Length: 262
Image 1: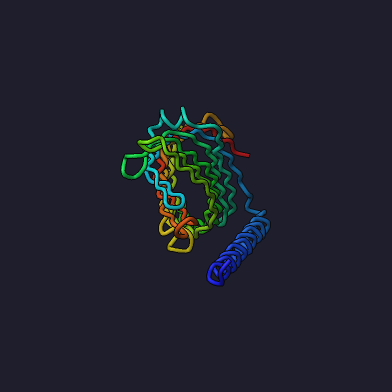
Image 2 (image 1 turned 120 degrees about the vertical axis):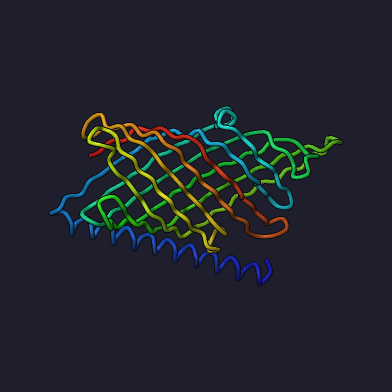
């Protein structure tokens, strides 16, 4: 291992350690505020949801790039496993929001020039931890971090049955900032919530954009159904040569979930 590569690994390790310590400090701060606000009460929400995403972008491993273009029905056919869930806790002003997405997909792909064809497998775990601060009855500011763990395997066959196989995984952390808006609709059982977050800024990804919007129907004080839309845009590339990893992907589609308050 050359000196430049060793230095790069040390810098990355220090970055992840600093990010982990930052996340730990954030959790401790949120817990402190939760206890400090106990007289005002602390509300909890859990959400389990299904997402029908369309995937559009490029997955690159080493010198091989694969164009990915999957409709929602293609994703449902290609998915081997998945989990999507969210937790939200809030006191009088401060709160915490945790959003976890896991997907394991296998699908057909093509080389960037269209000459090669074969299979691409993408396994992705994304977890967003955000602290929230309420500035009005309808609006909250958000700041936190996005953890991404993506592994990709590409097996492409050329016109003379030559096979090119590449596998690699990468994990990184992106700082995130955003705003959350929510409001009841009329005096009935409906409400609307929407959120916009951006991050990366060259720390991990060049840019990450997350947009969500949903309508909720409340059956009672503790149970409701959410129907909405979710958009995620990742622009990440690191390394070069055989160590290059690229994940330039848009994931967007309708979402439906069951929310419970406790």
